Image (cartoon, rainbow, N blue to C red; front, side, top):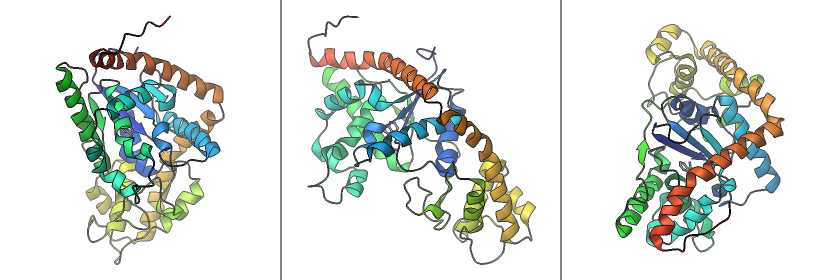
Length: 339
Ligand code: TRP
């Protein structure tokens, strides 16, 4: 159903690490749900990337299911699009190896994410170093047209484009499609509740900084009521001067659909207390249907495993041609496999 729908291929990956927050929902997942109308979408749970950092096996397993269930609860459609776990599709590891042989160590040493994550390069594992070539493999395997990327992943996408072009040049053939970044029109950036100049992050250790997609209503209310606000009493859009209030306004706007001007008007002359109460209410109400659906899905391992099997099977089929083109170009003996 998905193959050759004629629509551009949009590909996104995210690692099952940390906890999905309303920042991920507003900034990414909700947009993916929208984009399903216009694109042929491929959503990958990048569990191979997750193990560049040591993971507790039980936790990784549980979290992986939870991420898939949350994506489904948010509205990703596994029938018309492809949702799967990276570790289920061998082509990712295969292509990553091949690409490693076309990537310079100097290039990878310059990746800012590597520099940030590996304070001591001597001790860093090789997987962390080669993380970007695995990401390039994710993208190039499926002839992706577009990849939604945040600021932190732009350099990796640039490398992916670079590798695709290099391979195409070496063999003087269009082996890989060169992907383009997809920059969402208005990607609201949700900030930390306690430090509103920092992005809300799914790997933040401090619970009060974020609202998890699965937080209970009481907890959501408590976190929002305690969110940092700025001096003064005015509800006014001023991200520089009043980042705390601006962040709560962003959250309000993301869930209510109201503009900042409308929010200012609605709360003009009122203090922070009432406004925060309303934001909390709005978040609780907006997340309720997602949470309900999540709880229906998470215990249904048969359903989850079926979704993942179906996704992996289709991803395997879709990943073959690119891999084959590259093998042929390199000069490997064509594999004569049964069935
Ligand atoms: N590196 C990405 C991140 O940290 C995750 C990722 C892995 C990815 N493979 C991808 C994103 C392919 C887009 C496309 O967010």
